[in-house]
Length: 218
Image (cartoon, rainbow, N blue to C red; front, side, top):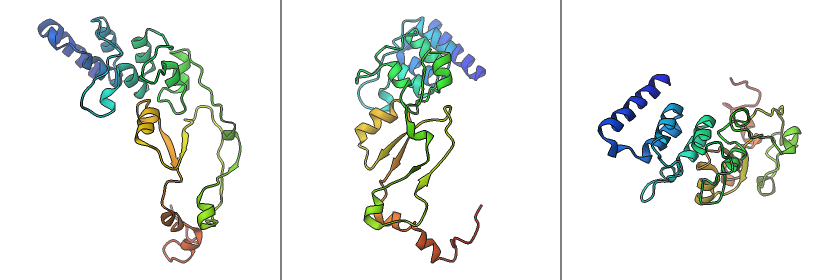
């Protein structure tokens, strides 16, 4: 990482000394998501805009600003540089702030760095994480009990990534706004066709030689 950052720094210096017209906000975008603090600090000294967002043709990722990209990369130190420590800075068209992004479930900036670098306390508020709970699905009403256990259980751990669970369909707009742009993972449930779910019922496995329940698999 140090070699890559030094290489980037050397390139920026060459541009400044020989081709200053080539210095653009795109460099800040690239340095932010890559996680290069020295380069970001250098570029900010040239008055580049951390809120600059490319327009025109391009995918959703190409239309994010440097702060959003730093968050996507999980680089809390870069976020602090770009925002000058202002966690209440609005960074998207939805009116969401840096604090909003960091405190979303599954944010790429993990709780330890959110608190130690940005001073933001991120705590889980989902009481269901602490309990063993039945996993009820729409398929039970349509095709009956699968024959498998309908309970899920695991140890609660505050350092674990606490992801959103989305049921059914998720529109393209919601996906990009709520998950892709903030860089958050999520679990999609109850979206598989009924026939595919039926194929995984326990009685189907009991009628096959290869996947007989009495066999053990690694």
